[in-house]
Length: 471
Image (tube, rainbow, N blue to C red):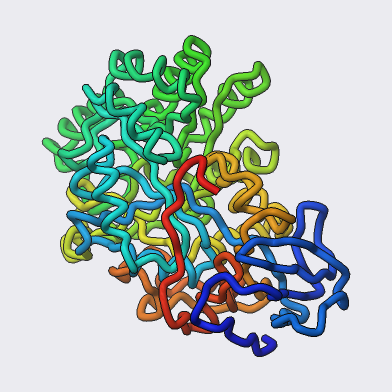
């Protein structure tokens, strides 16, 4: 990679900075260009050689310059559970992975972000810790309808709920009655509701069936198939059917997080065709792994909804291609390694969540490239789509005039083997360990300032807290 000079460290907003290269990914496609940056914003995109004599030049040569990735599904857990993950370690991992904007989930921090007061605690906990820009979702839990408008006015980008137990006591699941209480307020605000779409009924039935098998010794908790059977597709399918029904009734924007069951693709596609205000995401682990390949006791693969079968994975890829699935987000959900019970290998008792924040781009690119997709698809799924969900189109997710100069210098042909010791998130246990991936993030810029290059970070944190509606 060409040697990229440092922007002077005394200010993150320097006039006369340009990034140039022969492979710039703009909304119009890939082309040679020069990106002109002033006060952290892209002010012009010109021909490759149009550079003023007083500009500070970053020449990416033949490497790809793409928009900084936007990840709208991240659990950072600070304050309250910073021993699981914190703002400093998470945002360093994000920068190393080409993620320049994170929108963080309202759990698993203490307090959960379900009130304006809790939101203020969350923002205060970020001080001097952000390597990339971070915003927040609020939470919908039973009884907090009166907190939704204050949270929205404070700057959250929307709201998250769980239709099944979340795993932490501070963030209770909602029933249909709770959604019916919250959705009129969210519709009036124009705020999206993000839903963990699984219903308890099918899960409880599956667990009861598993209990009867246990009595005869036929249900080994160390086998991945046991975990998969305990979270059946019906739980997702029925939850999504409920969300589609409520979306039509209340005309409220709804978003299905981490879609796993490909059975739900057809009804989602039909609803979209009829104009439903619904969007959908899936995650790198659902696109990279298959249930048949997960070894006994490998609890680092446990997540909810679960990783499903190989055929299911390919149907998710097809739904990305046809637009039924709008975006890819990490669902980075780390915990202390002891909670994964790796020594016992018990899928039923281990914490569910996959640590992957730094690896999302190469994981998705490795899989997408093998299926014939291009980097422009990655930009659509991991930059433009998430920016749209968060209402950040025009500011994040594109290399375009008026957008923040969030840029990634990416080598799409380089390969590497995942070494947990080289990961920056707090805990290194990940199902990607040892996996060979294609695509290396060489450098990351946030609002025109280089924050990461070849394993080195800038001299100081430069990320900021994003608030809905702020410039």
